[in-house]
Amino acid sequence: MTKPPSGDDSQNRIVAVTLDEESIGRSGPDIEHERAIAIYDLIEQNLFAPEGVDNGPYTLDLSITGNRLAFDIRREDGTPVVAHLLSLTPFRRIVKDYFMICDSYYQAIRTATPDRIEAIDMGRRGIHDEGSRTLQERLKGKVRIDFETSRRLFTLICVLHWKG
Image 1 (tube, rainbow, N blue to C red):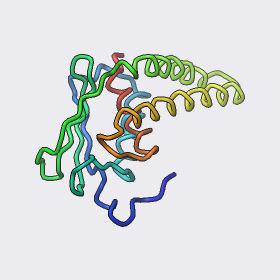
Image 2 (cartoon, rainbow, N blue to C red):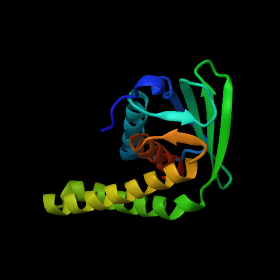
Image 3 (cartoon, rainbow, N blue to C red):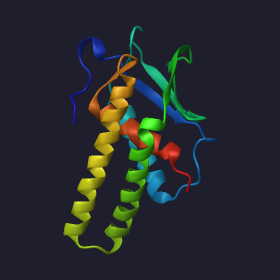
Image 4 (spheres, rainbow, N blue to C red):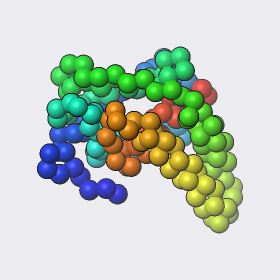
């Protein structure tokens, strides 16, 4: 876990996040659970600082528009700050692999041995970390985020991709 923001980063944080309902497909309880935890954890502790913008806090609306991931960043009062569109191409393979290993994981937790579950979970975390690093790279020069914030945002990006 990372430390809470300190000093001048105390206001560089997300206080609310929404996902575009039209981007979200039907999902089961596992996906809804992941979504709720990611949003809760993200709001509780994050570092989110749009480059060249005074301190927040910020709200974030995530959506998929065509082949782009949209980050609509606003002040807490709703005043627009900046919107960033990122190509989804660098995420496609990672998200596909992540979904496949998550399916294996959810099946395994119901029937597999603890060793098998642990092995699948290690793979799942590795792919999730890869997606998180990719997100940090894609946001470099646009928004400064720490790794834990990136992990939670990557989970939400996966939720947006889920089509049931």
